[in-house]
Amino acid sequence: MHPATPLDRVAIIGVGLIGASVGLGLANAGVRERIGFDADAGTAEAALRAGAISRSAATLEAAVHGADLVVLAAPLSEVLRMLPVVARTIPGSCVVTDVCGVKTQLVEEGERHLGGRFVGGHPMTGSEKSGPASASAELFRGAPWIVTPTDLTRSESLETLHVLVAALGAEMVRMPPREHDRLVAALSHLPHIAAYALADVVCGTHPGWSRLCGGSLRDGTRVAQSSPEMWADLLLANRNEVAPAVRELAQWLLGAADALDSGDRLELMHALARAHRSRTTH
Image 1: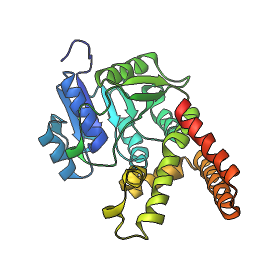
Image 2 (image 1 turned 30 degrees about the horizontal axis):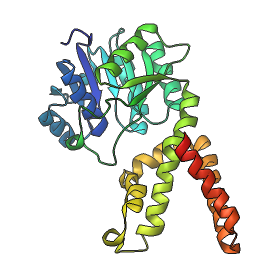
Image 3 (image 1 turned 90 degrees about the vertical axis):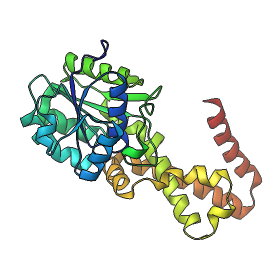
Image 4 (image 1 turned 135 degrees about the vertical axis):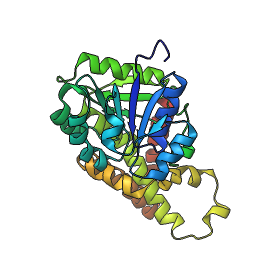
């Protein structure tokens, strides 16, 4: 074990892109025992072959038993179902975290089952690709890793998260769960909805788009290749923050449509110039 990484045994639950990247990063940091579990046995086998985990467990209970740290890297709905099982299986000193993109509900449930041993987490990086074959030990390097401690969080639990984040080369950013959800509604969830909308409106009605388009459409719709099932769950879980953001975007688009309909160049220029300033000066 690397001397700067006081983690002897880490359980990674869900070894797709993010979970397997955590495993590869921890392997590079010298964590030898990285026990993986995935509901899809083929995914677990692929993660084992890739070196992301040192051993694949047959059950969730077997994976988390005796762990120093549990990283829940499964979809939100699965993580919520796993929490009571994890809580009754892990040792009292074990810390549990997650990597889900919505925090308020999950932190409430995590603390209900685990108290101060649970610390919400969310690495602000990823890919439209999925699975351990796309994983990388460098995925988190230099990226923000938001953690959402509360008044219940133990100082030892937060220190364990600091060790994890540092081992993966990320930068830990602390904020309350609700602030996180407001932030990611704007920075992540709304852009995904916009990408899905653009892909549906343009790619869905122009079969030959991929042969003719430039970089703007490819870049603007890249994340629409992400799992619709996963994103539907995330967006619904954060609907109180995402819905107003979607309406604000819709109002902007309708305003642009009105300016185009009326031939109002000045109004259109104002809208475009305001957006240009926002993008280039912040």
